[in-house]
Image 1 (cartoon, rainbow, N blue to C red):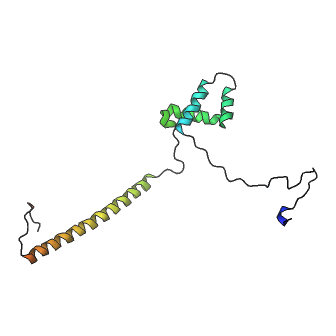
Image 2: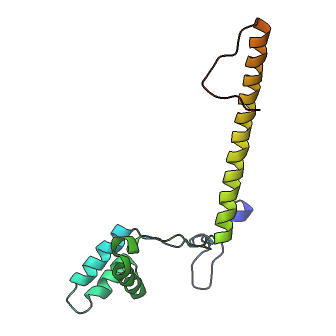
Image 3: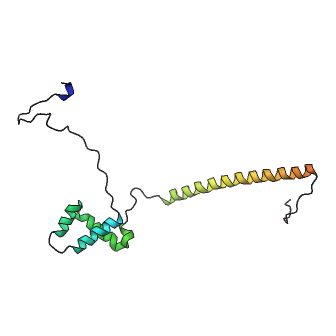
Length: 146
């Protein structure tokens, strides 16, 4: 018998071979509920008229009474939109939002400057080509800049 599969009989007559191995469960995840689910549960809770019916509903769904309280407040505050899950965590500050917008604008400016430089290069090449071929520059209706 391999060494890791030894059996041991405990004082209560149970062998360690009969006992399932102890396993550490991963950390529980925070549950999130959709707005439709919250609305459905609130409608069921509002329809409960018998004593203990709400408790039975909460046990069946694995919820707490504080969930109902919070969801009712959300419903009163904003209807279905109030029941929608909110993004958790730190809210983006105004300064960070402005910084992000500034970065976007700087990238756009750099891209546009690059396009302008390419366009100016093309125009210069066209001017040189016209002079080499001895053609008069085309009139586009624009006045030349000095």
